Length: 133
Image (cartoon, rainbow, N blue to C red):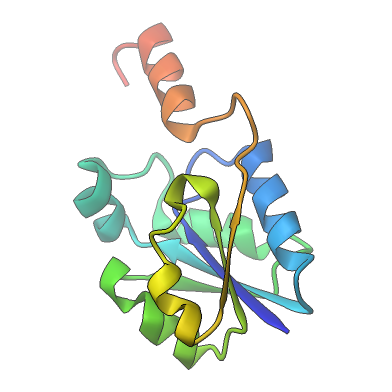
């Protein structure tokens, strides 16, 4: 079974490892869509700390990940699911219910996030300690 998931994966941390390993446990292959720099800017109003190329390289290096691609648009999720023949879509539970529309083309699972870990909070702490960044 092929599992697909999506994320920005900026300032990589153990929460990312946890969700990717758990996602992989649902199937025999894990495909990961890494949000493009432009998509991240349109979603969050800022560019990621690490470039799209670097984030894709980091995700590609993980043993639990079989294939990485660039996610260019949130509106294309169904197309990505179909294109990569995914059987299961896995997302963090902060997205609970938001992807239920895809249940007609694949199974949809929402996994709990790792408590007390947030990329946004990590970035804010670093910026607060080093305000010139």
